[in-house]
Image 1 (cartoon, one colour):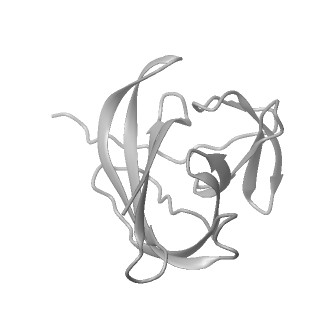
Image 2 (tube, rainbow, N blue to C red):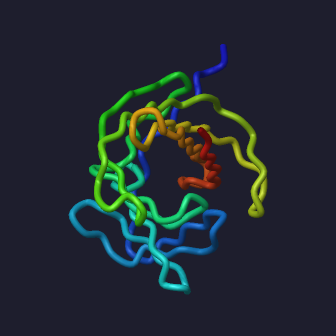
Length: 159
């Protein structure tokens, strides 16, 4: 009988490298249980120790979440957790309350520049903006237990 795929939360140490699609990032410090990764262009990505996204600059611009996008361990396909958090962008002028739907959608083969990995696809969706003019935002990330890292991101924005 095949075992259900499951991933336990990884831990990182100062100097560990992370290679998301945006380039090579190095863990430069840990502050208040937040991992702070930086690359050669001084861009930073901040993740909680649960790998919940706190702050990053990406395809949707600068994103900041409080407390963070949820990430509940261990990862298993079908796990989901709706959560109320706050989000901010440079255009928003401050934090706004959002309701995030979070789900581990699948465990699949993912091709990235470093090779092919089995990974959990984690999907987030939320609405932003005033009533009647709200936009949906979606973010997917793939976590590879073998690499012990998030190896791929994809985001969309639509009305």
